[in-house]
Image 1 (cartoon, rainbow, N blue to C red):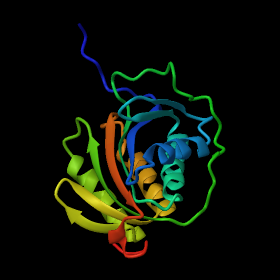
Image 2: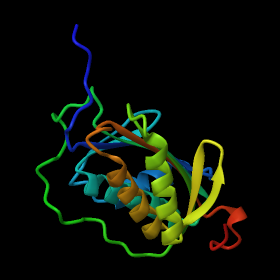
Image 3: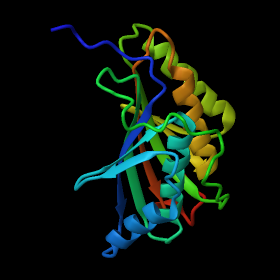
Image 4: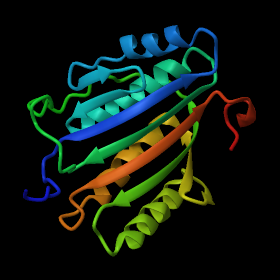
Length: 199
């Protein structure tokens, strides 16, 4: 059997779980999914997580919208997930690659987010240089929060945070590391944020 090779397909996927800190968590999750226009992505929810797949710009747009709509309930919400592109086992069968460039979710509401991310450029011996480059870019953009074991802290307005994540994801994918994984964990409306603007 021939080994699987990392792909060059533009399909991007994001598998995530949303955790509202409230007894009414089902309504918060379903409401966030309902309020987000997912026309441009393929989406499936099971008993553990939700996955969205499609073109990069639409996957990040939908992911941000889901987080923002959950946050607008005012409850403390955590979101954790994994972005991936170039997965050897991926297929184009259910990815919406024919969608145009128009973004369907354009809510510009401000929302503070504290988050952490980690980049994993697969099969690239120079992976640390890629990671350091994106951390330095986060510092230059003013969204870097803290260094820590196994991740880097990113914080700020949700639109700035997701813009950084999407660009970092695009920057880190090269021909040498066609398969790229990026994990993110977001905390929104946490009491520890000091009114929504602290670290």
